Length: 423
Image 1 (tube, rainbow, N blue to C red):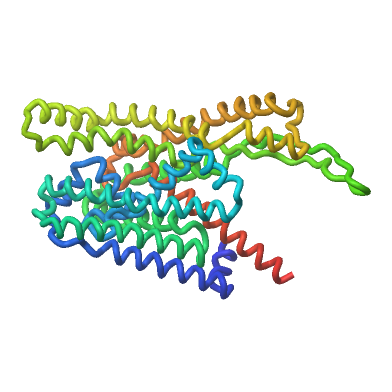
Image 2: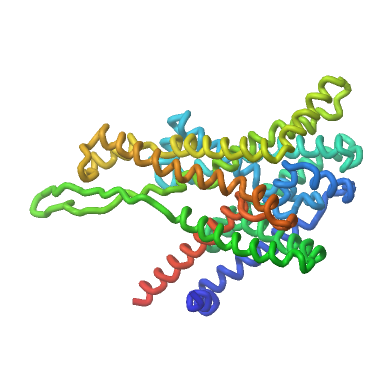
């Protein structure tokens, strides 16, 4: 491992790429420190601390909401646009052909549509965020031009981060958008450690030790499940063309335990926090019945037990939903049959698709339970350990571990390619 790290800085090409990535991430953090004008920092801090939705959004955006920076939306609109476009492949056949059958050119066009869709989504999200902050008196009254200019700045900030992510993907190592999210999550860690340091006492030492042990166990579990897969044995029939024989080999079809990634958690967060967000909008209504309903919504979803149970159930449900949307057993069975492949002991065609669905449903059960536990883990840890400033587990930990694993694989691929070039 240390040899690999040393190669990162001794191989000229890799060293340039690593320095370039660090430089882009520094630019990202500098833009995250530039606030929009007219913000009341005390009201903003109190509002984020008392609102689950914006507190969670602040963690994932790397603290860009702490001072309401010009990149206050992060890459959220682009991620939302990407998810919508992926779901559209199951509804619009043209998008499915573009993404799956037209090769690299089709995927490039598909990604361009995702970027274009991110622009109206960013405008819509910036409008809703600014209206809510004005109602909470975090931002003072704005003129029409001032409001429009802040919307344009927030949208431009999202587009700027998208551009930085594309630069990393093109000239660096790994996925640029994922690395920007990773940098945003990790950047909040020093602030959390600082808060715990100021409240440190000898009586908290056992809680800290237990917290570290549980943290290491959770990281190990995330790595095991993220890398876990079920290998389905596949054999190819022998075919003779002319004087040559093709096929006759055995391989495997990998089915990942966590087939859906972090998408189910993102879907679940969007739904479970939506009632509380609506309640925050309606608390300033003049109608007393609407105010009472808004307060009821906020109180219900601020209850940690109700929040945790509903959150776990939604994550588990969306794991099955997204796996069913993205994994087409019939298409895989048809492709295997066209290529002369078959699963050992299973007839080609419909029986193969039914067998794949059967296996996938069983391993998705484990993947759904894993994602549900990871999602509610911060609530459990904060209830058991007296460590309030540090959040253990959850989507943030899953994203961090996944990005690190993927980046390590990219680095290994670069090193292997370099060795072959040397040979």
